[in-house]
Image (cartoon, rainbow, N blue to C red; front, side, top):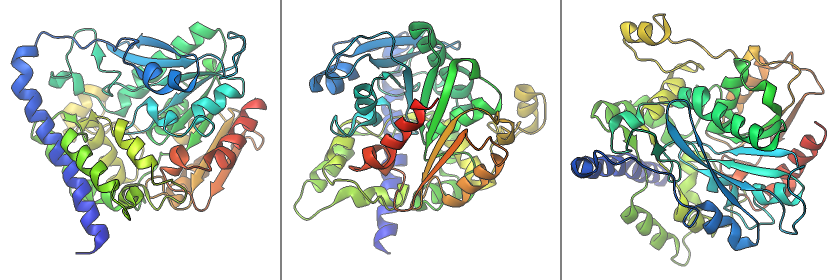
Length: 410
């Protein structure tokens, strides 16, 4: 077996067996907690205290409740490290990708992390955390130990999470906002934009590693999992929470990664592609906070997209179930050509990205071929892979500075 195959197998075991073990533990403790409702974390143990204020920035913890009852954590960095007057700064909402949370934007040192760079450049920064992640496990009536809590895919992020967070930031600031999404954060934005949602609250969108079409992705881990219906197998076993994080596994990986001569940035390669510009120490910081849980149903939905090469709503496979949910035998498609041609979009993709594959991005760009020329900025980084966009030590000058220049024109 080749080294890359071995790494793939190890990560598959971490993701899927760890997920199963976590769910068994949850099932054993369910009886004692069946009436417990998960609440939002206090300001004493949230992202502000642990990741923002330690660097000398003001930070506020906020919560927003979605229409279907999920209580989401948000963080606001109202001014830069040098201070200033909050209130009149243009707001920016940062939306992380799959198996991540808002700490995505805070992993690098302050002078390199996008959240801090935006704040120091005069923006009112808001960080979103999707349902099910560590700081967004709250719900009005459900516990995360309840399988019903995990009955969602990214369709619900489009329908509920995104509108709730947009509306909250808009109401708090009284201004239209800029949006930055990474990976799944781009998928939910594109889906919403294709339905003309949220445009009345948006100034522009920056899409890093855009995910829409996924049929040509080259990630061995993601492709193998999809082709072998692994997420479906986990779902059919009744394991509704997909939790790749287990203390024993994470500590083992951190111990391995700390040994002399071991560069654990390679562990990411079979999932993300060959990242060009990660400092090896970033992996330890990453493992302190990530990866984060998602719904197994969400993983099934993404696997469907990989196998089919389409952008459709979740397929219940059974025609009766599809009829019940959609009023038709097959799930409706998100039509990328429906995105408004005059809406400002900054899109950046990498030549080494195994998840947001170049050929899939070209399909998306084909759908946007009628976009107004001055409203679509496309950046191609030949050496970047998926993690570089949020963890590369040169991302500020190569991606974030052009992104901010784009925002200033809108």
